[in-house]
Length: 537
Image (tube, rainbow, N blue to C red; front, side, top):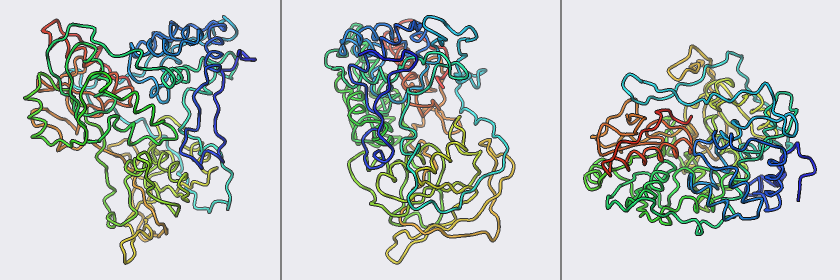
C-alpha cells in the first residue's frame, strides 16, 4: 500500500462522533501494518530530514532506524529500537508533545525545504532560582483581557454531535505541514508510528538487560508514575536492584487511574508500565507516611522520590459528603477499573481545565447531561494554549454547556443525603491573583440553584504534604532539587516528576532517566553525571 497523495499523512480510522459517545473504546485506531508502512515510505519518499527529528526528540529515539524496520515489516525490530531510548512507546505514541515533529524541517515540495523555516527554540522551563540551583514552580501565562462569556441557554433537544465527542483524544494527526497557509507536504505522523510499534511489537523480544556489571546496590523508587518507572527502568539497565512502592495496586499512576480509556488504552498502559518485566519488584497498595519513607531511605542505598499529584483538592463547600459527589480522578478511575460510577442523570462539573473535559467525555459516555461551571471567565480557562472560544463552541456541539462567572456555594441533598442540586453565586472578575488569573468576586444577591443528581469536582489535585519525609526540604509545596543532578537536601534521596514541578508524563519520564544516570555514578563512586538543568516543559 502506498499513499495516493504524498502531501497528506496516512489517516488512521476515527470513530464517528455518534459512535464515539457510545463506547469507551479509543476514538482513533492504531495504524494497521499496511498503513504504517505506507506512512514511513511517504516520509522517506518526500525527503523529510528524519535525523533532525531524532535530534529534536528529548529521548533521542533513532527515528530513521525504526522507520526503516517498519518499512521492512519488522515491527518487533522497530519496537526494540524505540525501547533503547524509553520504555513507553504505546503511551508516548498517544500523548507525547511531538518535539520530533516540531524539529523536522517543513517541505514545500518533495525534497524542497521551506526556506523561511528556523529550528525551534525549545520552550524548556528556565532554571528558576538559578542562584541557588533550585527548581521552582512555573508561572501561569498572561491572561488576555476580554468580556467573559456565559451560556445559559438550554441546548437543543438532540444536539449535533461533533468535535467534543472526540476532543482531547487525538494527538499526532492533522497537524499539517508546518508552513503557514497549509501548503506543502504534511510532516510524518510520528506519534501514530511510535504507537503502532508499541501496540504491535513484542516487548519480550527486546527485554531489559543490565548493560553494566551488576552493582549489588539497592534503590527504592517511591511512586510508580512515569517519573518513578522511567527511573526504575534506567536503573535496571544500569545494573542495580530496584524496589518500587506505590499507593495504587497497579503501576502506572495517573496514566492508569486518571486517563480515560477512550484516549489511553489500558492494555498499552499495563504493558509499558510493567516493572516486573524489567526485573524490578513492585509493592502496590502501599500508602506510605513519613515514618515509612524515612525507614525506606535508611534501608536502601539510594531512594528516588516521585509521588504524584493524586491528593484531590476539594472545593470546600457544605454538602461535599453527599452521595453522588465525586472527585474527577476518582470518577475517571472507576470507569478504568471497569465499574460504572453513574448511569445517566444530570451532571454538574465544577472546574474548566483538561480534567474537567476528560470528565465530561466520560460522563457523556455514561449517558449524562452535562453542565460545566467555572467561577472565572472564558479567558481564564486553564487549557494551556487552546483558543477558549473555539474550545467551548466545539464542546457545545455535543450538548456540553459551559457556565462562566458562577461559583459554587453549597451542594444540596435530599433526606437520604443524595445530591439534588448545587447552589451558585454569580461572580465578577477583579485584579489578577497569585495564579496570574483575574480573581473572582461574588456578586451579592445573585444566588441561583441548578438541579442535578451528580456533581464532579475537577478543581485540581496536589501532592499530599504529609507524605514528604522531614529529611527532604520543600518550598511552595514542591521538593527542592538541583535540576542538574535531581538530588534533594538529603544526599540519599533524588526526586523527579510532579513532586518537583515537572509537567506531563514525558517531562516526568525524562527527569526519571536523567536522575538514574546521576544515581548510577553515585552508586559506583564514579564522576557525577549531570543533566543540563532544564525541565522538558
